[in-house]
Image (cartoon, rainbow, N blue to C red; front, side, top):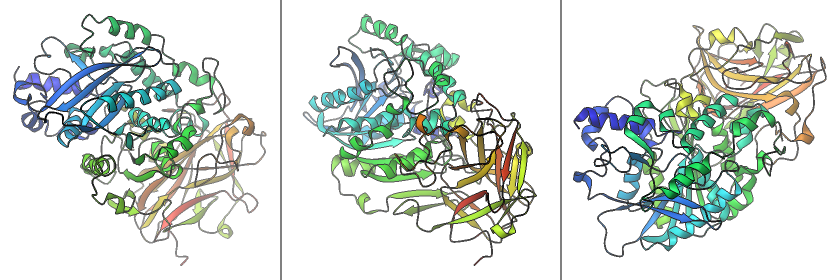
Length: 640
């Protein structure tokens, strides 16, 4: 095969990275030819690279007679009896892939979800790498009763035991991964296994209900349908669903080598046809504590946030990594950090999911420039290998400010420099500085149910098949603003940094018992270009603010429990207050801030069963609707 053949193999590997972005996705299309030349088209197991890695596959038996397909990758050049700490990945998206007959001599197996670059990085730095197909996926047997089930969590304890019993293991484990893998990484800590010394969850799901499946209590059906179709096809080994190009080159998930007649493999694929269908259940669930008829527990039980005490008591050091424009998952990173005292570090960059790309609207180069692998290596070296490299002496929080295009550090979150500044909704679609400046008493918005955030929104970053091939960049929102209720400030007299949790506090009425409100914080340039900053949403029956916080929210806390549900009284004023997804963004001098409000995001979220024709917003002294901004070292006013 000439270079074109290697290029096809590289593209196939890229496509079947499947669900979430890993470090391989940080590579931009530009320079692929150079990358092919440098790495021999990722030919990790060809003759010229045979001295680099040794690959093994096994089945790990569970205590209920299921078998977990497992890959082990070790450095080929090692001393007799040499032992290594382990970097563990517990994957839902196929640990490795089997090329067709003409691919195998060049590359067997093909790595996808966890990129070959990352595997080589860990091995070259003195770690063994272990990849496991979690129960009911890949080549592992078993049936999945639900994602992130207690049984799946318990399997992780068995895997950790197995690793520490291997002759190549030094008995220490670090666990990591992106998204689902980041979530299983943290859930491994529930077992409190003494060998698991460090965990680096990237873009993981801390609150399954509010951060991904029902943000604000509203079903995120568009994503779940794409994700369900992908996982069902992967579970039944239908690679062609991912890519016809991949299907021409890839046979499917890698079988375990000793299963030569594929007896166990075939049993596994048959098992997977009975896996739980989360998309089918999604429209039938409204509340966090609601038990679907096909489940033993409510959806809140299948989430990291239900295991805070066990994760905290594990003593395992956690480093959380995410991007500001990663749907609701930057909220997961922040509240995961605040909820677990063993969270040692938090980094949130100008990224989407994975991260895949630098999505700052102020950069022309979307390459991820932050050296995440080296940063993770420092963390694992300190906590897994015991190397005193000083990472524990550094400020624990790294965050990036859009607009300033700068990295910053902090000791605590929210940062103490951020002082809440209140703006008030007023007539003439204005946001004003003082309550005494408010004019009028109310405004009625005729809800437009065609409003959406488009295919380039952060919600689309969470799976490749949901990205539609384009970047996450939130193009000019001026046109969609014309369909929304908008309130805009005067141009700011100086640059204004917003870092933290924006709070929307509305007084509103609808002529129905339910509905949903979507709010967007935006920057408006003097020329009228409207740039998305962040957003929040809330189903109206979940508006009750609960004093019984189960998460350390900065703003109003909504439980999403059945006991706290309150129907709206038609045409009666109600308070609807909620946080937006956290952010760090500087608005330049001469630009304005806009609060835009809608009744739907038709591109991502299901419509509520009841859809009010109108929404009325109140801004009198009795009903002071307001926007609360965490402002740093500057003001949007001349108050000072």
